[in-house]
Image 1 (spheres, helix red, strand yellow):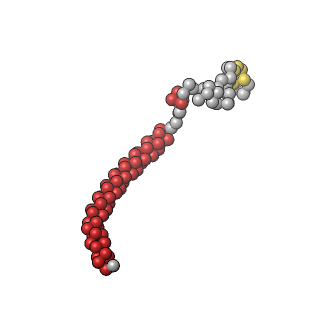
Image 2 (cartoon, rainbow, N blue to C red; image 1 turned 30 degrees about the horizontal axis):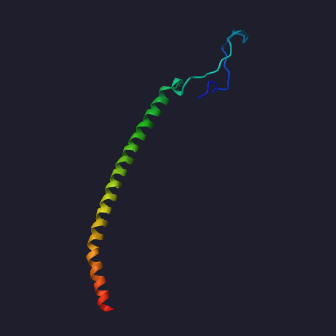
Length: 104
């Protein structure tokens, strides 16, 4: 991330009760070195909402992992069944081939 990631300039101004600017600081920009340096201020309600959403995502993720594991097992079982049936089919194909040769 470049140092000028925020194109906006900010400035602290000291304003009296009549709205007259009595003083101002030098304008500045936010430019953290990395995204980890960014601080986000939020409300407790928003934090709780994010936590709840995170928990929902974790539950959904676990359900998907369980489903994936189940599907891999089903696939493995189906492949094993296919191999058994192919093996059982070989002698039948040989018998069929011999019968075809006799008919000719």
